[in-house]
Image 1 (tube, rainbow over the protein chains, first blue to last red):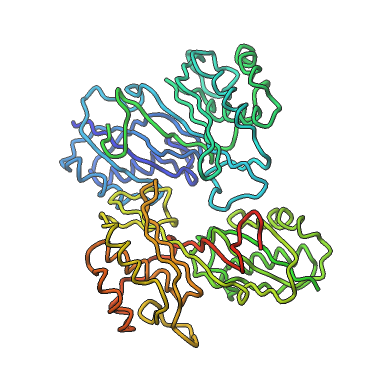
Image 2: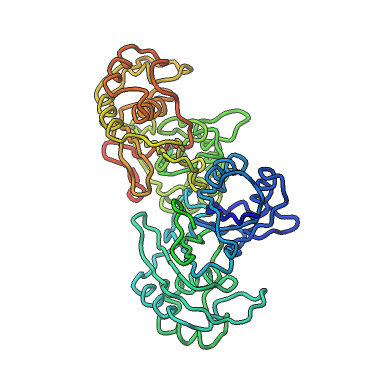
Length: 255
Length: 255
């Protein structure tokens, strides 16, 4: 059996996230169905992580075992020809048997996009969260720094998933204004709790709006009280943006 | 009666263009229905031009006459609250009685986006035309210059609309590679024939691919033979991008 890794990207708007579900269309099920058609065998896909309904992936890595004789370099175009065009596989390669898309992933970065404007932009629908007032960038940057390091992120997660530990290490949490006027929040960590990226983005939004102060962040983290932090922002503004398996994965070179 | 001008933008994916049609959803009909609801009066909307089904507008100007007492500065948010979120009005103002969105428009710019890549990008679906090979930018730039000036553009239009003259003046035709890797073709002119922007984009694509040479362009224009030019590219890559009514219209200051 070969162990094959795929690098892909998807617009999550029309999917109930990555993970296979009954009675809902997911990216994993959609991709699996194509792999079954191509290889003629049952396929069990492992993804680098769950993404929620409506969340996007600029980059995503999955792996599966298959006896297929299709050369890996032929797989992306063959798969894409059968996939809907909101999912795209950019690279496929044989990987060591020990490779596991979830457990071999060392670090992930999520990026949240905010469009601060009273007037909505039709091109940002399901792609950036519209906030109808100005945001103070300096405060957001100052607050973002408070999330960096190793903390218990209980105050920044939604209930619903059982985890061994709520401690995670954030390598960087950066806020910047892009040339198109959007505010980008990039968070890289060794792992993310359920809704953690969207809760941090919502809390940073509050610091930009002036309802939470940067110096409140350590207090909120220590409290482990979700109700003290900002809201979980909607999924359409969130992108899985970078992945590291040893070295960083790119669209071009793959894993 | 007041003469009110609106500045708007729309993602054209789900619309059969601007112009009112029977048995098809258009931007004009969608916006008119909202204006009727708000003002309680029949409304006749005039737009700055027709856009084809699936073509987008980063900026668009329309005007209508109404006895409404709603102050213009209250109109954008009131209209947007009732519009679907792929259309957005950014500015409204009272304009002189002589203002006519079609005839007062001096110049328009359309921008066509090409994604040159074997692998499709799910975020460019209906937003940029994927061309599955590399394009030689220098040749496209050289060819673009040949379109500038006053020419008979019969070779760059589709049949279907009766026009007095097929002569138009192109102020600029510019090709550039954007930081995201897309190739952008911007064409400004005093007017555009039916499918003219998409035919020029298709012809420039051919020069980038090497099937038409830059020095062929003047010959093709003189021939008035549509079959010698490149294909009409799909609508999803085309954006009405700039408008001039005397001075340039912006989202912020409006007309």
